[in-house]
Length: 326
Image (cartoon, rainbow, N blue to C red; front, side, top):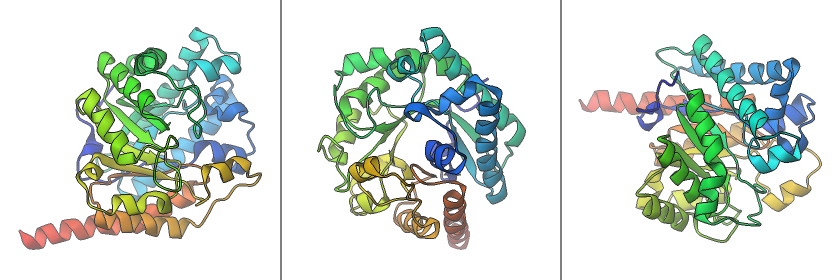
């Protein structure tokens, strides 16, 4: 069932989008109750399944419309043992939810993929603990064992890769990479950063990437940044240092607020879609290797469509300049 596991198309120069803030869209725009932000819980009934299906369909249509690739990220950010147990799932039923989530994405790809819009299926891993606070940190070995079952389930379900989102300390990221290497799955690591551009532990992003690469022999296919606003990290990426080339994806928040402020917020801050898109465009002009563009908290289809409109002209400008040079 897998299609791109051995040759990920997002590693080319082609532009890919991914979705926006799944959980904030479901909660604030569609009125769903997601206990502990667990979107996968909707897969237990038909109405929830249809809500997720319609959500992913909307981004597949965007990819078709703008002639871009799409990374379909499964609704499994909370589908690991700790969070699953809190919601009443045992090991077997949790594995079934992970399989259902990947199966849904296979259906979307079958219906919407075109030659111009390849669609890559990614099994999404979330942190064992809180996405913003690296409490009760695991060792590398503990993290590898902890995340192994979910990665194996994604492999068996035919996902093309796994993406670890909102990683807030380096040992968990390394453990995930080692578990993916053991399973034979490509893996992407997406770190979150605070307003100063550092991980919540205080570790500089450059040092975190260097540490993961050193211990795993450059195991990740690429890195991403998610759950942070571009103003929190754009200065770091603009320095032109070699490590920046390892970052291929951005999933920014709509809001420029800190993690602490977002945790206290009672209303959704959906920012300004056009402004966010322009910030993405500015980064893409400096760093054309940023080929995967999506959103995180507070973003929705409006933000991703604005990003499409802002960044697709850059692709055509790039190819036109190549044609003129040749």
